[in-house]
Length: 168
Image (cartoon, rainbow, N blue to C red; front, side, top):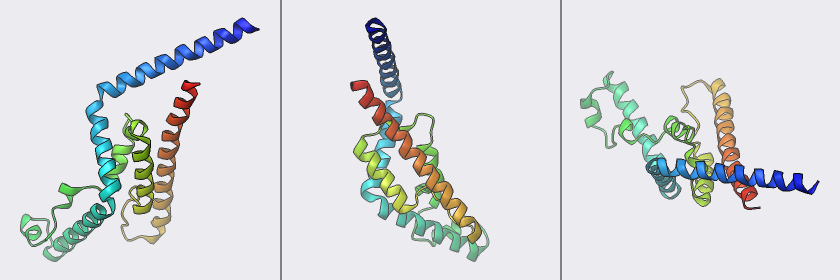
């Protein structure tokens, strides 16, 4: 009946307002986290190719110095023209850690930044762990990276769908 429909709409609107209030509170409470994450995503959008190139060269150089010296001392790194990879770590483990954080930073990021970052992540294999020399594992690692990327894209598109539903 008409009254039941009004009650359902009213209940849905109250639930939506409560959800929006919780989301707003979460974003305000963790504003610094979301700001830092969005800044990192934004920087990767503009300098990601360059940054990942540098990072990968630094890792490679570090490994060469380590292999040549047979150790991991500061003396072997002082010959390198690159920073210690740990100090410029923008590798797959770091991005997975950030993007899969319980606070879901991509979900509350500007749509344009999120979209461009996810596009870049696919192009640069940001979620693909480096190879350890076993080609048989390469396909499995690539599948895992693709699943992770799909999950992030689906999670962020759900937010957009919910926001559109809340407006109606």
